Image (cartoon, rainbow, N blue to C red; front, side, top):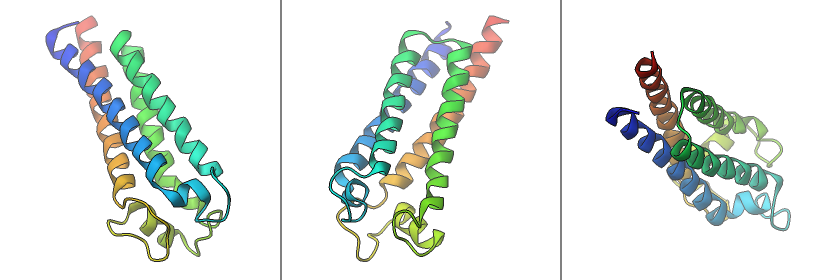
Length: 152
């Protein structure tokens, strides 16, 4: 693997670790996510869904660092893109968590100020996670392309 590709491998692996860290921050600080806005004892089903994505991020980082290949970068691209899509499409579950509209749930998830009447959480973390998933996807695509061009 050439030096430029090694840097891309490190960047993709590091981005997956950042995705993991942001997700862990959400899991530990978002009381709304943990308890369905105070309606259920810890932990609400959405919390476990996000925990699963954190595990995927951590496994992704480990695989990128240990076995980089065109296929691994393809999976990294698909995985991070799907996780970004998953995060955006989560607004469709607005009724499940007691919101009256997609817009109000989107405002909670992606707003930069605390949503009125919600329990404790850090506004902006979902925005950061989405941002890093998109960046992870873009850098994975670049790494896949570079890896492919160096093996041909």
